[in-house]
Length: 320
Ligand code: UDP
Ligand code: MG
Image (tube, rainbow, N blue to C red):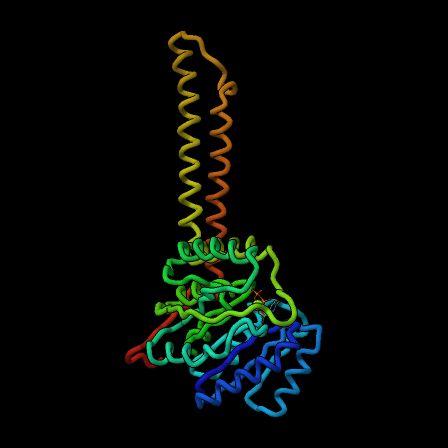
């Protein structure tokens, strides 16, 4: 099979017939063998009934329906587990992404040998309240992930080599960072294609402004787990030791100064009169706690079943 189209959807009943007909047309014009995987993310309208009706006359239409709403990432992940096509294309169900981009994306994966191609809505038809924070967000994501050639991490329209979707796990709200997840799994050929974007025709957006707060928190998580997930002590241990040592030196200076002045018969003050004494105490306590957090982190990692699972590209003469 050439292409799997994975479509997560939540209350998009009005858009589905038009979207399906459009995809079918593009596939027929290009002679692709394909499947369309609808992942119904607990819709409360009649999206699932519409999908069932559509599937009656086209066996290439398949679907999974969640009992309740889990979010876009769980929906995508479920689609990825079932996708059989050589190239997997994800798109939103709201007709904002154009199926006409499918052939171009397909060729970039098969001919230009990209692992992942992300759409770039260069000209966006969304309100300013969404486009300006998005710019900031993408700049940060580029910096943290080290994928400098992407303008639009969170574009719903993306194409993947099948192997890529089988080796990444999208959970929580991590769909915003799929290129970063792919990069962490060792897929380095990440490209971008300018795609057409349209204003939403039916229904309304499912994401509010909280997306930006959560987006940044998720980015911090990814950065941390990518860098220190397997060795938390390298992060907490270093920070903790530094704080402890600084605190210790400071408190030693305060104490020794007092002893010296006492000895030399100078005027001296109580150690507890110095603000540095309290600052040092706090630093030493925090330092110890950070250090212990590192230890606990290491204990958690030690017990993880995935502590020794690596991405293997190929093997030679390995028989067992
Ligand atoms: N979506 C989903 N589960 C959710 C929220 C959204 O499957 O909990 C789907 C939604 O139906 C659409 C896609 O994710 O197909 C993108 O959502 P939306 O168009 O609301 O996002 P926006 O374009 O405003 O960023
Ligand atoms: Mg949309």
